[in-house]
Image (tube, rainbow, N blue to C red; front, top):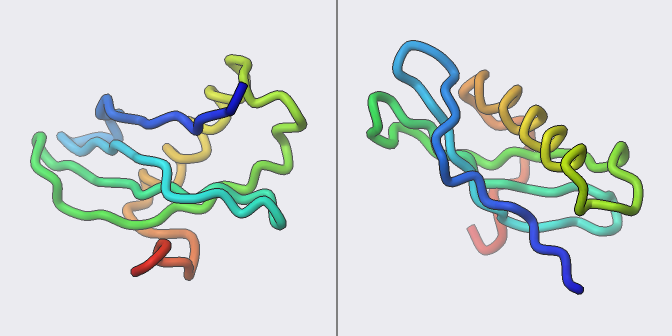
Length: 94
């Protein structure tokens, strides 16, 4: 079975009409980092887009359980709530 990184298509609120969604961008196996493109929305209109890096050192070998998804969501939410990227990486092919 091949693991597929989840998409975060349902807007997650970060306050005052602002929310985020995210799509998988890439996985750096050497450094155990995953990259997502986060879209910020204000009142359901996209207002910004940026790359977020999440280190997966905490994940171990099983990425299929609910703990993995919950932690990944928390990590993405924490950065999305700041409204800015946490990496110099701009995305594959950009």
